[in-house]
Image 1: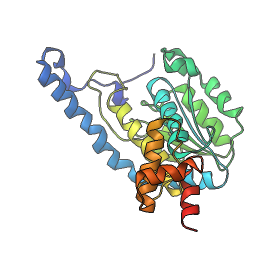
Image 2: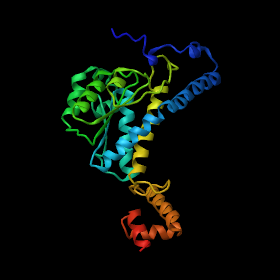
Image 3: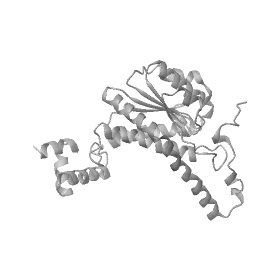
Image 4: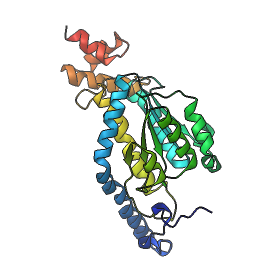
Length: 274
């Protein structure tokens, strides 16, 4: 058996011991109060987060990729963040890559046993040919998931930058990583349910890494998404509003200009300012 005594996310939370007997309003209020700890805990890792963003942005500028890898909730959150990058920032689908133990089927159906194989994680990364400009982020609430540790080991051997995201400072994942982002979110509201505070902290960090790296590589103008993919009517309208804001024209005028340039905001700006 794994000794879980020192894993924060596996300990009982003394604040929520009697949550099952509370009136509903008190129950949800207590849960909300505990969730705030995830936000405050991020303060601890901001310097490390900034280092990771700089490594990722530098990698992008030199042909590198960003890999997220995890199991269960951690893996799903990595895949979610990766899948949002192409439509939001107009990047290729293989620039930010999310990998989950058990493969894509594990996104919808629990495949928790897949996380126990160090070798499977190692092989998954070894076959992808990572190099010095790539960054791999291992995501594991406990910081000791064998699949993630295997992946991190393979990435390190390949010369990539290796980062960890966990809720257990000083974990094996932290010891492997070049950059450690492990906010102490404390015991969960429901013991061991790391989709709660730990998952919230992971999502906040992933938002920060991908968004700030994209900003630093020129895919955001001021705070506007100038590379958004206009794949539906809502997004075409958003492109028109963004273009109107930048050029000082009406949204209808902007829509007309975009229609002439395949809804490419950058092309419209370049043509308009000639």
